[in-house]
Image 1 (spheres, rainbow, N blue to C red):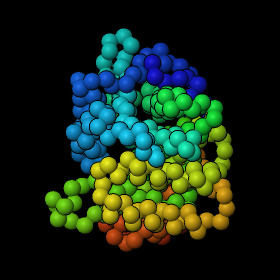
Image 2 (spheres, rainbow, N blue to C red):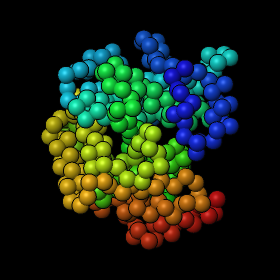
Image 3 (tube, rainbow, N blue to C red):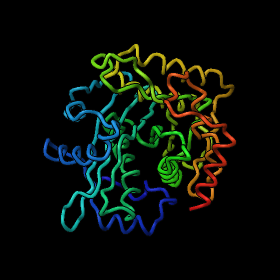
Image 4 (cartoon, helix red, strand yellow):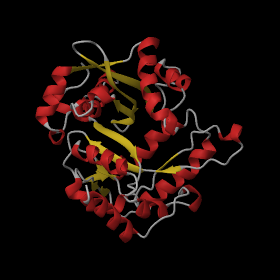
Amino acid sequence: MIVDPRDVCPGEGPEKVARALAQFSLDEAQGDAAFDEGYRALDAFFGPKGEIERREVLWAWLAGKHADGAAPIAATYHMILARGVDDGRLAGARDCFVTLDRAARRCVVLLSHALVLPDFRRTGLAALLRAAPVALARRALEAAGIAAGQAEILLAAEMEPVDPDDRDTAVRLFAYGRAGFWAIPPAVLPYAQPDFRDTAALGVTPVPVPLVAVVRQVGEEDRADISRAGAASFLRHYQAVHAREVPPGDLAPIRERALAGLAAFDGERVPLLGVPRGPAEIAGFAPLLRSAVMPLFPPAWRGKAPLDAPERELGRLVAAWSAG
C-alpha cells in the first residue's frame, strides 16, 4: 500500500477515507502489462480530450529512458493503480512525475492524471489518489540521502480556470481545496502549459494553454503564503519535464511571461489564494475565473470562447450554483 493515511488531509473526510483504506490497495504499476492496464483506463477518459501523452511517451518515462540523475532537476515518472482488495479489480489510476532539486532540497510532485472508475466513485478513493504521491516524494528524498524533515515537499497541479458554463472546472477545484491545496495568484505566476500537439506535422503555430497553478505544501497545509523560490519551482519543475518533449523555443515564451509576473511581485513570500472547498464558498473563485485569468496572456493564447466581464461571470457562476 503506497498511501500513508497521515498524508490524507482532514478535509477529505476521515470516515470515508478509513473505509477507502479498507476497500482498496494502491501500488505502483510495475512492468508493461500493469502499465498498459492503467494507461488504457486513463486514455479512455483523457484521450478524447487530447489531455494525455501518447503511450510510447509515458512508457519511455516509466522505463527510465529519460532519467538523468545528474540534471539540476531530476525527474521520474510513476503510475499508481488502485484495486479492490477483495477481487483485484482495477478501481482507479493516478500518474505523476516526481521531480527533485537536490541543491534546493525541494521535491515537487507534478500531478498529471487521476481517474476513479464509475463503479468506485464517491467511495473516498479519490482522496487516496490525491495523497499517495506524498509517499513517492519521501522515497525520492530518501534515495537522494535527504531526510524528509530537512526538505520541502510540494504537490503541484495544473488546473483549468473556472468557467460558469463548465461545472466540472469548479468541482475539480473543490476537491483540491478540501485536500489542502492553495492557488498561486495567476497575476503573480501567469502559468501556461505548452502545446503538446505535433505542431510541425500539423503545420500550425504552437498555442500555449493558460492554467492555474495550485500547490499543497506538505506539512504546512494551513500556510497562506509560499516562498518566491517555491512559487518559481512550479514553473521550473514542470518545464524540466516538458523539456524532454517540447522544443526549447516553445517553452521560452511561457517561462518569460511567468517569471516576469513573479519578478514584478514585491516581496519574498507570495500570498496564496484559498481554493473554495464547496458551493458555500463559490464566490471565492473570483480571481480564478476565465475572465480574470485569460487577460494576463496574449490574445492568441486565450482560446476561442469570448470573455465576459469578471463581475458578470462571477454573477453567472454564483447563480448557477445557487440553482443547484
